[in-house]
Image 1 (cartoon, helix red, strand yellow):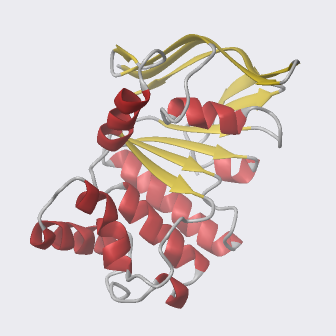
Image 2 (cartoon, rainbow, N blue to C red):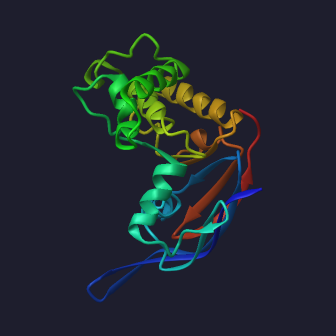
Length: 229
């Protein structure tokens, strides 16, 4: 079953009279529970595509259908609701609060959702154990390594039980060994039923996914089915 369907999507940015085509007639689909990597060099359009997939931006033309709903024409408030309910984000820069404990960082989205303190603390602790940080719950971000901070970010992305995890260069600021550990966590999450989409410029990271979509100059260059890693 297709969870994500992008059809003839175009995204144009205007700076005065200058027109920049970031995405040019992009079409692809992602099945529920699939692990897909989107690979491209800097300026290829992959970050713009991530913003469209994450309901952070809408296409200039074309359609983006998520779980049967066309989200490409929704209002900002409607897009925010889609993000809160269906998508968990993991960023290269972690986006954690520096002097806040791992548990409280993971619990943040649940605070905004109005989930009671006892319930959100319990859920945050369970998620930290799931990503291998059961012994680091009371550590602040400044007391954690890059790999550990990314694990906290993954746990936070899972806090609202999203169907889709969208990760933008999730291994960009960590060591090779830590990157391998993070990618294995994503593989494990995919086996649990989550749809995983990773944006990266590294083919070695993309190899952990089931399928890789290569993008260049705003167009899909090719799609490759990956062997198991």
